[in-house]
Amino acid sequence: MESTRRGMGELLTDPDPDKAREFFRTQKKRAAVPKVTTVKEAVSRFVHDRDYLAIGGFGANRVPVAVCHEIVRQRRRNLGFLGHTSTHDFQILAAGEVFDRCDVAYVVGLEARGLSPNARRYLESGRVKCTENSNYGLALRIKAAAMGVPFLPGRSMMGTGTFDRSPCIQSTCPFTGQTLTLHPAIYPDVAAIHVHEADPLGNCRVRGISVADFELARASKRLIITCERLVSTDVIRQDPTATVIPFYLVDAVCEVPYGSYPGCMAYEYFSDEEHLREWLNAEKDPERLKAFLDRNIFGVADFNEYLALNGGVARMAHLRRKELLVQAAQE
Amino acid sequence: MAAYTVTEMMICAAARILEDGATVAVGTGVPCAAAMLAQKTHAPNLVILFEAGGVSPILPEMPISVGDSRTIFKAAMASGMAEVMETCQRGMVDYCFLGGAQIDMFGNLNSTIIGPYEKPTVRLPGSGGANDFASFAWRTMVITPQDKRRFTNTMDFVTSPGFLKGGRSREEAGLPRGTGPYRVITNMAIMDFEPESRRMRVVSLHPGVTFDDVQASCGFELLRAGSLDVTPSPDAPTLGILRDEVDKYRYVIGK
Image 1 (tube, one colour):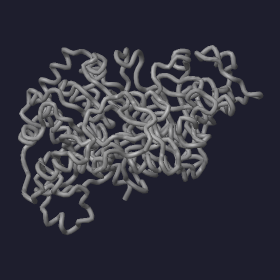
Image 2 (tube, helix red, strand yellow):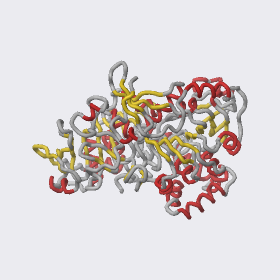
Image 3 (cartoon, chains in turn cyan, yellow):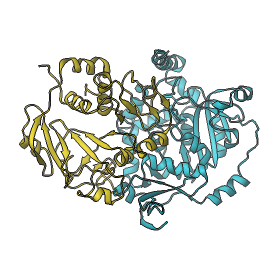
């Protein structure tokens, strides 16, 4: 294909599929062995300074919050980040100042809840190198990696600043002569995805929307799964149609009930809007934010302590009712 | 005549445009309220799509996120980002709804930054799915309050494509044929785009508003349709549905 135009955004990851193949051949353990561990151990082993990180889910929906907290608690630094509609996860990671470069499609905002004052300050400080992308563009970049190809074409972004600040290339289709935007593959060093059920080997089941997680699981060099419930491998093998992420993609499995809190988990519990508002309010003043983080992240040993601090079982039961009673009206 | 707010006026005006059986991609807030209102009034077979994967839900209440579990309530399918965007890219989505911090006379939108890119005054979320929807949907609808700062000639950033530089420039840039901004619905008026220049043109004034009022709240020169309609006021039954069923917690109309 003839290259016609190049975005000026920097490539933050290497799109070369042969290098990824080499990694998957030599360094990805594909054995069907139990991988159950703690979030603390998983982050310690699989998330390193300077890694390029991706977080599954959709901002505050089915998002692995415990992993985000642990990355902050362990004070990872100089990460790259995949900002594919990243809202509460971005808020947590920006508060920990763990990344210094970011492929942006949607960050800083929390949709209808407003903008994160601290994430804004962090990006406006000039300390984070950004590229611009669209959500579909990033979905294609992840999908390209999952397919093992260096790029995928799409028909958006032409003529805009989003393209100009992207690492994409515009080219002419060799079949039709139409203009295409070529989105380079992203192979994240590590990704974390929260699911409904997983077995100890890492076979996963997800209900509700998938966002780009099935592709992300396949694109990532290392993958941490957190799950609402562990189930036995027998359960998985009785209904293989339900498996959406197979064991050989997974490096760690952590059972984290209410693991998307304060976000929503479809068919399990709804988002805790009051706690999300508390986060946003605390961010208005850096001193208050520091106290908030000390209390909720640095001052607790793990995610269970964080849940206990914010209403514990009674609060979770309330959010569960909020989700299930609306869904029950569907029956 | 029933009393109503400008937000209610914008929602009702947008809902009226959505015909039964149409496919529409929406975000949260005012666009979602418009789609829900249409679904509960004249367009029960409206197909609503959310970019995170929700396809054809029957919304029980306003979602807070385009990925929360309300977006798959009684849905036909819970899918993913690529599925929904590719449905748009294939040409199967009639409408999308967008907003932005800035819009120009060709309907280009900015939701990325205010100020220079390298050192922004305000960092906004970025495209999200907006650039894709604006590229792929047959008709892009923009709902936004208007003032001189938001409706501007000097865009700090073009996040999502309107008619780019006007004329044929959108097609020449390679965006899919026959797509582009369709209506802009503000607190004062409804605009379309003049077919040759692709410049924004006032076609309907909300009750009590003059063309000069609209021009005075706009940072660029607006075109004026040959005959200007008056946007119908929302009727009492429609307002009742909006307040009691669509947005009973006043997430959108309460603001």
